[in-house]
Image 1: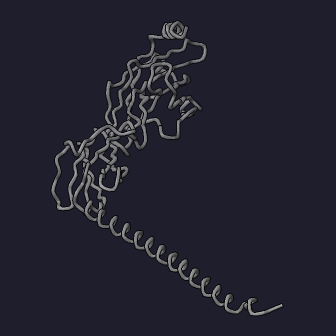
Image 2: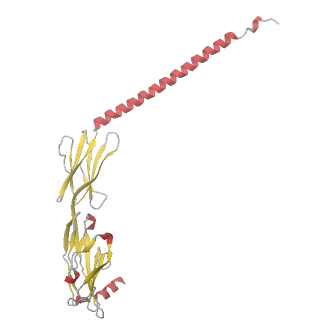
Image 3: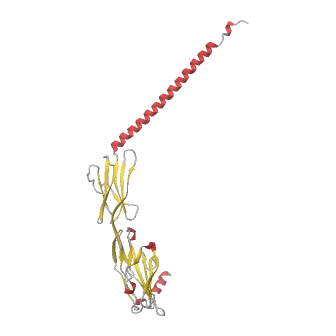
Amino acid sequence: MRAVWLMLLLSLPGGEGVSVEVPRMVNGTVGSPVVLPCNFTSPYTGYTTFKITVIWKVKEFYRGPVLFNVTSRAINEEGFENVVHSNVNGRYRLAGDPRQSDASLELRSATLEDTSQYFCRVEVKRQGLSPYMKETNPGIILKITGPPTILNMYIQAINATQFTLVCLVGGEPAPNIAWIDPQNQSLPVNGSNTPVMRGPGKYQVVGELHGPKLGGNYTCKATNSRGDVTHKIYFAGVTEDRALLKVIIGALCGSLLLIIAIVVGLVMWRRKSGSITFVRETRNQPDSSKYVY
């Protein structure tokens, strides 16, 4: 049913009166503004009383969610105003002037999650005349890239002797991860002990270092075409951990032996005290055999 309505909408009288042009792809960088170009033509260009509505959608043609909706209208014979109807999270603004056939959109402070397909829709209306409308299909593919960011580093312990260093990194393109040991030696990249895999997030990777032996600072270095970043994590070392474990076990054993010795001493003292008291009480008892009734 929706497909039928869509076909009817695109076949409205005057539907071919507006032409809309956009590039197939636009690239952007994390943290920077990005402009999505959109230019159009309409038969009402020579008039001043018509309204131009610009609608930008994302993900899906016609049915995708609306990100930005604005109408340019005349306020007098020479002046115009842009009335914004919707602006999701306040992240968008017109980068062009609809009165100059420019419906371009600016996205502020792009993120990796902004990577998607965007659709520009232009509606031109003049009172008493047929409306014209057109939405681009296909839309603009926006590709956002960004330098690596180390999101987290931590140590996984399977038991007292098996450890894994973990480095969680975000970025696009997917960063490469390398490890540098405490002796400033670079370890094999993506080897059997240094695997790199996709992370829990869409634009994340995880680098692991299995079985580190040396004690000291290990460095995780993440690199892609947009830059690189490093971060350190301290690992005590397997030998230090064993020594510490021995100290803890020794302290616990010593404490346990001391407690046992104290308990044994108290028991022996109580027994000894009890026997002496018994003997004294026995000696003080009168000997009934000495009395004759």
